[in-house]
Image (cartoon, rainbow, N blue to C red; front, side):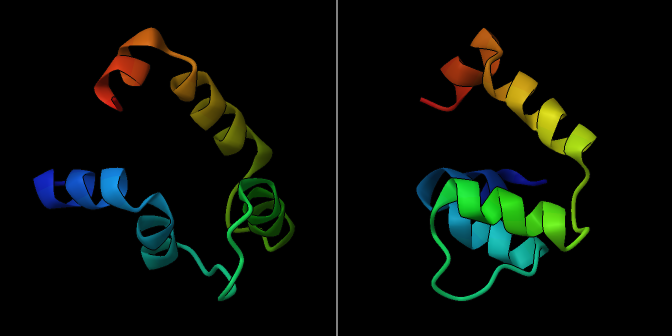
Length: 65
């Protein structure tokens, strides 16, 4: 991940996700997206759990402001 990727993610997280994952057009509810990624086998439950732990990390929260 480079500086441009981080900037893109901070400006539009969904666009960044759509570059990496197959997310149907028009799907923009985070819960629906996570469920689709799980159901389609694009991510595992463990990967989602790790992302949630990172999201709750105070350092990461400060970085994402």
